Image (cartoon, rainbow, N blue to C red; front, side):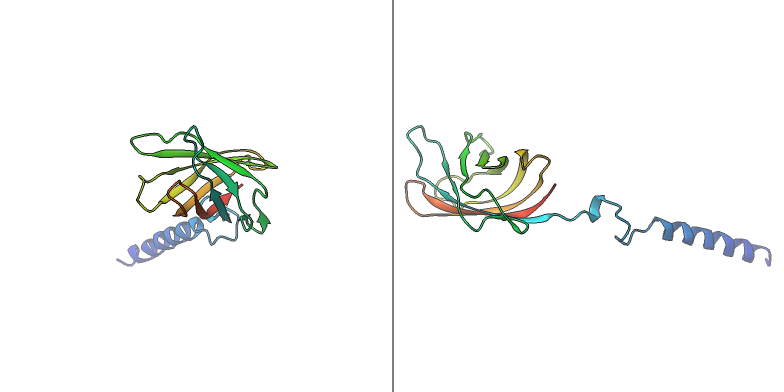
Length: 155
């Protein structure tokens, strides 16, 4: 019995040291779950549908990625709504590149709220990933409105 105690103590100590070595307190740059992103805020003005029934509009001031302005003077256009999920791909055409995101459109008359995610980025937005939530407020029966996209992106 006396020999079992020291052996057990050694095994327990080795096991605890192994568990402690696997821990990551975030100071070692281990990546993965410890990566932090930048906040993103995109504000848009949606114009009334055009003659072809397309949704388009502009990015308005106050839109940001981190501490920088996002897409100042930029425009956007939506691809066709893909039934039955009502999936939409939106391309923001900005002075430094193009950012394409996807979200789900709600049927007419239903308040617009959806998760969104980055699909692809070109130029300044190449390698960008992330997403968040969006909401829209209708300003007219013709489809004019305001949207706000919030979330987090990483480069």
